Length: 360
Image 1 (cartoon, rainbow, N blue to C red):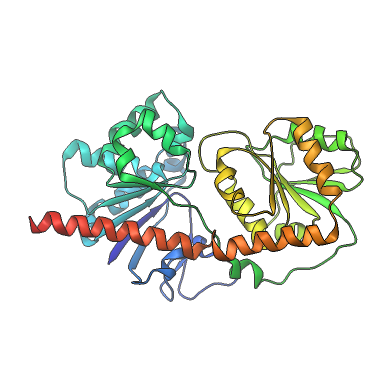
Image 2 (cartoon, rainbow, N blue to C red; image 1 turned 30 degrees about the horizontal axis):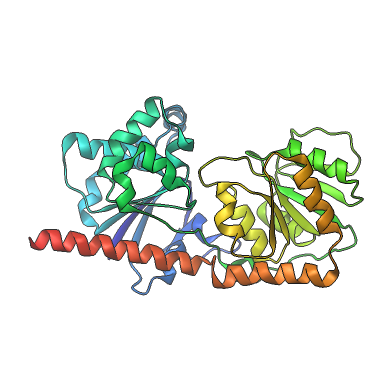
């Protein structure tokens, strides 16, 4: 199987496997890209990212889809058995052109992270998405309730789509070396956007908890409380040290019907951090797999305050059970390997269907 993968982020290309780089952030001929290493039949994968000249990047940001990436691969499409597109912004132009000019391509599998640009129901981007998506051969998504949006706005995709939970590599995060320092006991909140910091800060103050609250990722947050420490964006290795040494984490996501914040949740689960999270669609599918994640009602100060107080009253043994539940969930359920198994099933389904169509 030869796959062309279009991804909606930039990666680095190496001759040999780099150190301290997540597998999704680099391409190297010495190993299969990202989760493809877990396929039973490991495919030959070429990866095209969204790197482009600066002027084109600015135009793409306004248009909300990637022009340059599409034109880089147009002439090579027939070399592949399958086109695997991660992010609908990377699929829009290719599929719109395919529909307009009626040219043939290998089957197109799309992973929709943002419910076609944040589940919008009107506007130019929405109209383009509706037009282009009729050329998708299959759609997958990481938040199960996205199907409600598709049923309403993209009904032609419902029968050729499925929910695949996103997974992370337990070994990748746990084989790293961390600086352990438990002298400063604190609560952590990680993220730079789409976080409900107002509810968290108000709930934290109302709870009268003595532990410090570290807000990491958004330097624009302002608060005079000496127990609230605002830390700007930090590199991932340093961030993981903050996470490992925290007492527990709060993930106060906003309530939207698409995927975001899930990797923050799963990375923290993988290293055994107990978590309080907002009960929102992006989190709900994943929280139910572990007793180490406690949910509160989104935007409800009293609900979050109550969960903070409950967490503070847990015994050491109860904390350990939460930690074990989270690491177990990543190892056995929400793993990158399990995600890859589901993706391989979809790839085989599409190739089988394509083969049957050709034989007719």
